[in-house]
Length: 134
Picture 1 (cartoon, helix red, strand yellow):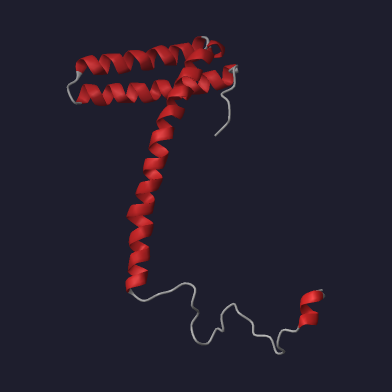
Picture 2 (cartoon, helix red, strand yellow; picture 1 turned 135 degrees about the vertical axis):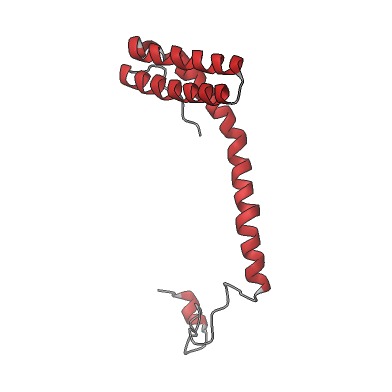
């Protein structure tokens, strides 16, 4: 989590970023246009076209845009990651654990034939064994 966003962006990285994010914004613009939101479609489409053109013409100069995008992504992930992990815990693991408990399953107790993890010693503990353990 302590990773820093690199200050410089190579031309290949800038092109990849701009074309990917530009295509995503164009997709959002198409969806907005399909649902009848012309203003929103124009905004998303404009951002997508601008990023796509910048990625094709000046990909090495998109460093500040990429840094801002990654900063927003990190801020969003600080909220969504704990929410998602909490949902997985409470929606998946907790009900499974409760079902196993209701069924009488205990993961620490082995079935009768297995013997478990504990190995009984043949001789009782003596003081000399405690002093020289190895």
